[in-house]
Length: 190
Ligand code: 5GP
Image 1 (cartoon, protein in one colour):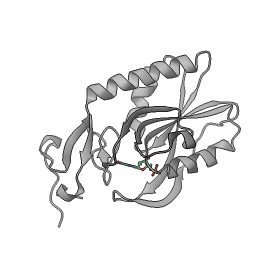
Image 2 (cartoon, helix red, strand yellow; image 1 turned 135 degrees about the vertical axis):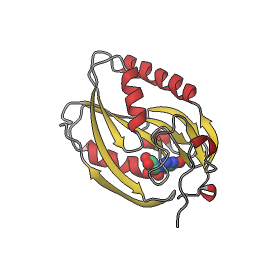
Image 3 (cartoon, protein in one colour; image 1 turned 45 degrees about the horizontal axis):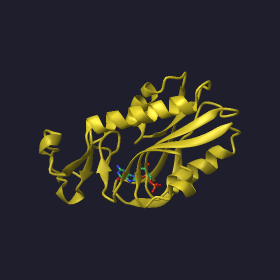
Image 4 (cartoon, protein in one colour; image 1 turned 90 degrees about the vertical axis):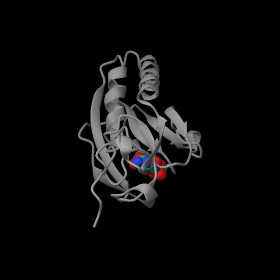
């Protein structure tokens, strides 16, 4: 039988340490928003949020951009309930907006192996957009950002599995206000 979840994130032994505080996230996302505002001035970019991990980032990023942005959502799944990739990416929910002649910014939570991004690019590049850029909150130090064509990155992080600020472990921790390193061995629930 699984244990009940700890009453508070503060006492949760699976939350090993804080990697990025609320304040660090807020500041960097404001910078990204200012950069996008400058780069897309005179245009109305379409922010494509990759569900579910990027949903918190998307809401803060969109409000940091001083342009008439539009928003749509796409959902893919590459991880099961565990912290290891299955190596297979599946489209779970497609976009509703037509991409023809749009300036598309793909909003991702984390670029790890790049498998998800490669799949998304293949799927979106055939849809006639005027441009397609990627804005990821996080990227692994090991990720080939140039090869993957990732133009905007919030933070480069080491190989630890992270949760919070939209990112999950078995669907938990998405509502954590900061980004934390997760320790699966100390998880009393998962
Ligand atoms: P990739 O396809 O680049 O290997 O992995 C990208 C996806 O894997 C991300 O969108 C995210 O859903 C998941 N992922 C990779 N690393 C982590 C991590 O440290 N924490 C969480 N919660 N998800 C991760």
